[in-house]
Image (cartoon, rainbow over all chains, first blue to last red; front, top):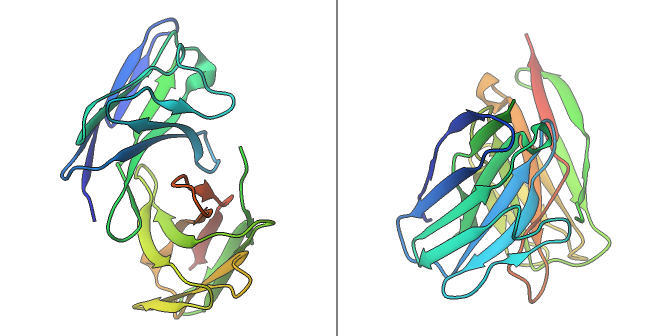
Length: 112
Length: 111
């Protein structure tokens, strides 16, 4: 299965600022997925990132708040913009592999 | 977004006991996946199931893809301390690459 390197692993940010999270996959993948995991909750899909086209966002998530880049088949970024304490969550990227879907180790974001 | 019904929500067991958890859906899936998440980590894939009725083992773990394609279960035999964590099921519907996740089962081992 693909191996995904995600960074930063954690950050504490001031409200009103933005944070960009990066994911690097060790193989080329057509799709990458970004999830949010609020404290004590399951994973909720934010958007699907395809190389060469705009990301597709799930209901409740918008591009202005969570802009995504997918410059090539091994890399993607998610930006959490104009942060508020409600954005404090774990953010995870994922990609399909030969055996199931692999996840990055997550970015634990705390907004103060 | 939609989430799968996963039960139980939490389990408190003694070391050596067997564990069983399941996920159900109102719609069919083509793939069922079972993940374990430790604190501060991303989910790690345990077992992937691709065919209705499929029964797959990974060491002490066994999972089955329900015949109706609307459910799956995960069993853990002879639990050990490192089994502690949160287990998630995830399903992939036909014609869709996106996963839907279960609500999670938190496993705690009582000393």
